[in-house]
Amino acid sequence: MGKSQNSLLLLFLCLSALAHRSAAMVYWTAVVELSYDDSNNETVEKYCECGLYGRNSPVDKASGVVVLPRGDPKGCGPETDYSRNFSSSPWIALVKRGNCTFSEKINAAKRQGAAAVVVYNVDSSGNGTTQMSHSDADGIVAIMIGNIQGTEIACLVRNGTDVQMLIDVGRPNGPWMDTYWLYFLSIAFFVVTAASVAYFVFISANRLYSLGRHRRAEKKLKSEAKKAIGRLVVRTLKRGDELTTSDALCAVCIESYKAGEVVTVLTCDHIFHKACIEPWLLERRTCPMCKCDILKALGVEEDTKDMYSSPPAEVTVITVAGGDTMYEVPLNGSTGADPEQHQHRYDNRAFEADSEAARG
Image 1 (cartoon, helix red, strand yellow):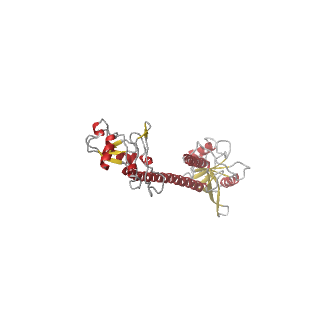
Image 2 (cartoon, rainbow, N blue to C red; image 1 turned 90 degrees about the vertical axis):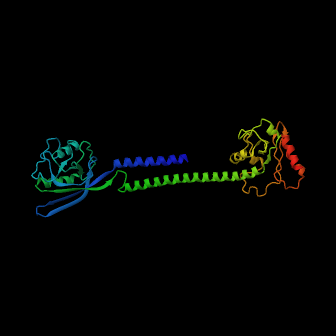
Image 3 (tube, rainbow, N blue to C red; image 1 turned 30 degrees about the horizontal axis):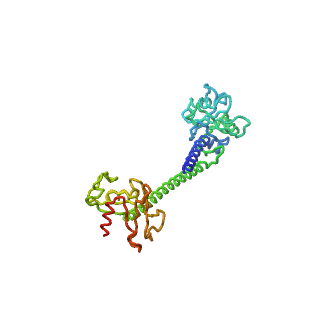
């Protein structure tokens, strides 16, 4: 069970690491919408999901008039100028890739108040794009578009056309995952969580079942112990009994024996107060002194299904001390054997005399 639990934990950690790593590898596309009036004063609108958000860019919307840097189309250096006649309107800087880092291009436009920065790719790259890394220029929307599209927009702006651009959020993508990677990770997480919960429920149920089984077994053993206790020899001490005149003590309560007290003799010949030994035997079922198991001594089989369905007519229990037989007891007095064969023999002669007197 420990190995299974460790395997589930390892799988969960791997999926968690996979989710964290995949989140770092995910990139977002950008939807680019263009709107401008052509030479015939007709409004032209173009739409494509052809942009790519920078790695350090907020994945957010932005809109404004497209503005080119004066002089250098690549917009490098702090002296880059984006002069315009519509200072109160939001605007988007359009610069070409090359000559300096993406952070330098973005920061130059950001300092002059651009709402977003669009970088178009180098010549001969077609409409290919890459994800920009600009860790020193965050807090502003920055996307990259292809060279063909960027060049076309730049030509329109140079010819005096006001080009309105809207940048919107596209779809998440990854180098090794499809667009539904979030659904995949969610399902995988749910499966692992459900498996973990099911495993712990199974373990808990198994433990509860084992505990219940143990309790039922203990209850059954107590029931059998009661039957066994009922078969033990019980007698009342009389004045002059050897136990009352000697220094003998009950090993359970550590009290001396007195006349009139009821004692129980175990199969191993050890004697205790009846009120002391019976609760002890119900819990432990063994002699406090020699650990003799009364269930085994009386022939009780703990694993037998039909216990005592037909109890033996007689069971003889023999314990040896110094090589001499100390105790023989019949468990059922209703047998047809000779009554003389069903007598108790004790080392305690006073007890034996009392027993013979009772029979007489």
